[in-house]
Image (cartoon, rainbow, N blue to C red; front, side):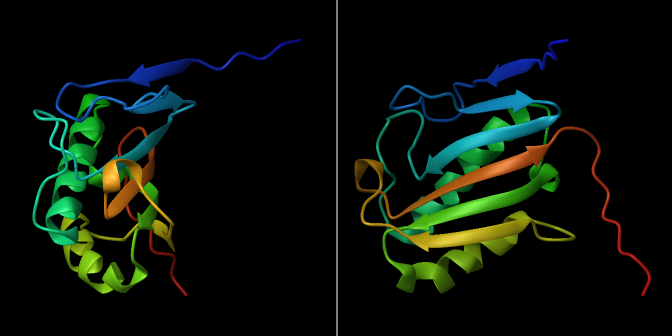
Length: 140
């Protein structure tokens, strides 16, 4: 017997439009898979100026817009993947990254890549669980 899974596309004008054949995010089985967000201003379609720190701030604003469109917050994120044009900017990115999470940080991977869309310095993709999230710290 076939099993069916509902799939819902998440889209918001408050985050940049996709610049290719993909969705901003897709929800399947109470998990949201968000496409990578760069430091692009959704109003202009251009990267913000000011280097990796400004691009990281804008990427997180874009992530927040997609999360809100799905009824989520940063607390729902369980995994991020960070793509950097220059791994030497990792420490600077961490300064911005840490401001967006309270409680436990999500799992994360970070990679230097040869290039990112539109010449971006950073791109961040996320996986989030839908629903009320609570931190559980097991007793040792």
